[in-house]
Image (cartoon, chains in turn blue, purple):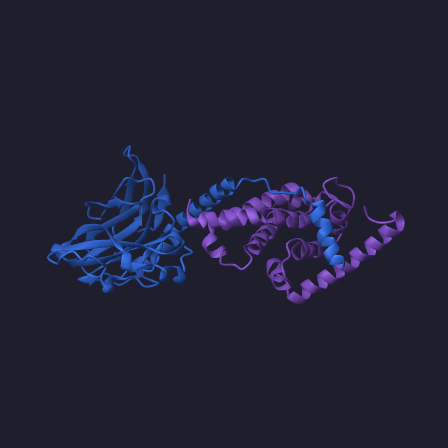
Length: 231
Length: 168
């Protein structure tokens, strides 16, 4: 058969043909491409669905916007998240004597997802994430791999009736702040690569600014204009 | 290193050389094939959680590389139009390049689509359906290109055998 002969002949003739590019170079280039995709997405995708949500959050679980830190997150991957083993990542003060709890859990393929819930300040700390806060396929901010590898970016902003929640990735920022339109500055929490914040009021904050350990700006995200500048 | 990266690296090591050989046959240009393939693999890694779900990830890589070739070629079009090549640049005449053996030279003399089908079907061992997806063709078209390509090669081999007593 000529195709079998051809296969063998071509394999023989091309025996010395090998791609010499080290895989480390490929991975580095691919990682750079991911960052570019994410930067574009910060302005074009992430904030729009978040702002589009009506302010429906009340005491109890806040509705999480459809958002993720990576654009390729699929329902199947989110379905693998083991919320039973979720850990409380941070607790912030919320209006009305309440507190905002952020929980993270892992799943297949190095996926880490984060969800949040608002609870009464008097309620005892739960040892497990309540059923009401378990994210469904459309309900969590997720990252593939180490969140600390992500760029400074916003994943979601959820506005409630009295408070809002911001979730993002810290990138090179060791601290970050929300600059509200009324001039107030709200410090955010940076932990495990995540950027977490809770702010009073129902208005969309003006901008998000991140700073590195030398207090230099690493990025500014105009939350109203939906534009990002990564330094 | 994450499990995802380990998975990508294992796939890269497994398919990179076959992909390069197929792309070399499809383009006829070693340097171009290496550049296209490196770029295509980087894009595959950037989207690896999705690409890895493909039954033949190398098919995704090859399609990306061939699409890149078209866009890169368009950019170079003005320059190419001044050259003597009627097809994509860099395809040598049979026997003209020391980089290619006799069989490869015969394949490189085929029309571009037939070369691509041979590269996917014979060198990369993709089936007709995957080849059709990679090249953006109907399966029947792939079969037709393969038939014509093999027919041409058979004729070339016959005439080569008669004139030289067999291909080296």
